[in-house]
Length: 66
Length: 454
Image 1 (cartoon, chains in turn orange, yellow):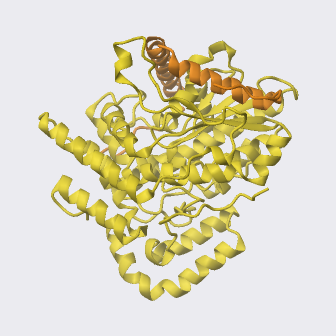
Image 2: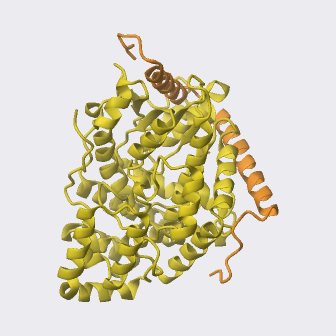
Image 3: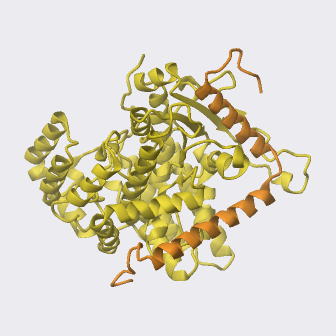
């Protein structure tokens, strides 16, 4: 990948860094690590939903489920 | 510098009020827009003309439409699709003032209500009504729940906001990324359209609340920067969000991530920019380019796993409208000015096709044709490929759907639940489409289900 020929401004640099990281990530063999992180993320979401349910902060089950 | 303009489409989703909105809906639509204060005079004039001119000609279409769909409740805003302005499913961005504080928007939702889809079946309307009523009852509670989910998806410092994640608040939808039971699976397949606008509303409220928090940070704080994904459905946006979920890890310094649903057709970008600039926050946009002709297979496979199927019309729009809208946004005066002031920047990638051979041969790259769309610097309109031919993309996607159905049937399984999510859910948009679109969708429906759509 060619490099920009000027010094980027901070926000532009943040975009370029993010792009480089995406490219690096897609080129690397990260499937196992990604799967592990995704499982952890799913577990965090489920745990938060359980907390919200206990606090009564979720919609009630529908009265007439199909 | 060019102004943000409405994209020109080969066959836009026409806002033909004389055909698509039953006469009974018009008063509610007008009063809803007036209540939101979002309908400019020319639009109101258009509505008034439609009301006057369309009475006679609309009766047949309205009667047919009314037979299939249950109208929204009176007095609530209605979100009607309009190419380049409002996606087929979702909300017009003007529903919420991007400069308003979350508290103000809570009051707005509690007062006027969540905007409703114009056309839903009776069963879908019930699901929409229940979710919307829960949000309207206590918008602050809904926002808090969505914010906490976003933090669980990312982290407290870097929450990830995604519309589909908000749907998990609904018990029947289920808490998991995948459906945990046949009931959850069926609910997801049948009610995606019913849940989507309310989920968009709640996600935007929670996002604004986070932006209000970020606004209080010092000017040079590294978290005073947000990341926004763009791309069609199943285009690989997950890879973009992955830079914060997986790749960057602790190195990531965004204060929030808006993981845009492809269904939004990239229409939220300008709204997000205004919301961020008003609060002194900078924005990095990431765009995943892909060829829709090859991507619908991924939607169907994901649907098998998760029960979440993007219908074929929404899918094609997410590429055709999405690319056009994003190009226009990058060329807009608003964005150009933000770039000049170093308040915004964008990058784009085209991952190309995944090489299955890389799974067994580790010397092979997973994405051999991966491209950075703007290696010279920030992304510009010219870096974005022209929108795909809509009819060709639609026909290719329908072909993929039919091949999928044949393959699943050959394996002795039932493909129809996924096929219904893909095709039956698209039927509600057909009235707005030109004859060539209606013809190919109806023909495909007959080949798959053995009958014309109702």
